Length: 296
Image (tube, rainbow, N blue to C red; front, side, top):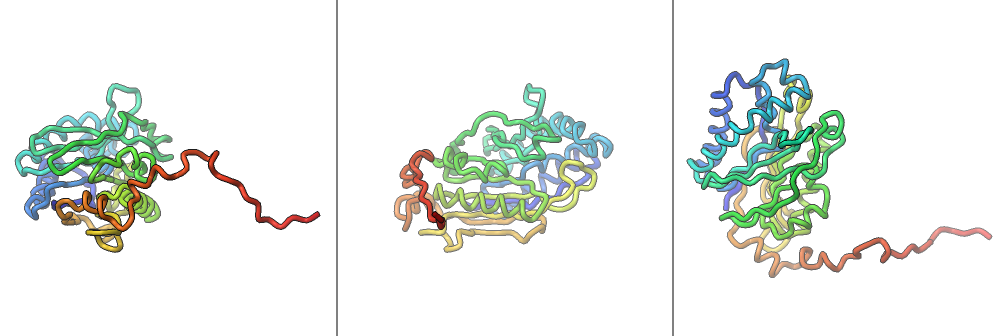
């Protein structure tokens, strides 16, 4: 299986047709290189707010609503492209007012059939909580596909091992991210690599890159695409299958051999996934020992 993960620059869109052309060009390029699974980043859909004008795009609250209002059209576009190109596409996540007062952060995975499954972010960052007011949405799900079982941990979610453990039956974990600083990029990358180690699976990270001065929400972006596995049998000793150049827009590609995940889980030098249950379940099993110097 060939995977393509995006380092995606957001732009001011002059028209809906410009957005269609942009997404179609990215999808066609990856499909043309033989990719079967394409990952776009967290909040990459914020550029849709520019279709309502720069005044709206520059206002945090209005931009959230503007993106949500366009998402039905964006989903129809991604469904059509997935069918036309015969690929699976995880579209850039977006704020969605899904019947609630506040938006969720939602990624959507499209199959070549055109069918779609969504995944909402579970744990919000400080900025998403205040001032964005983004809230947690639907629970985690495992997605059965022709490429294997896929799970999605949106950005910050990848930094929490119990969320990764909940998706330990996944062969592939998708980690769409949007990080302002280099430290943020590395936090998510380290989280993605840790989840690949623990679950002995493939973790795929995408990033928004470049400046978006028209947006209060995503004005500065640092990142790169990357594909990671457990540093064990059938995978590189570093665990890095592929990594893009920092802040360089474009696709990063990786080939994952057929059966690689099943083989490393079955025959690997270590068995992190299987041995997870041997960890202490609560702090009651932790013993406190005192090595401090004591005076009488």
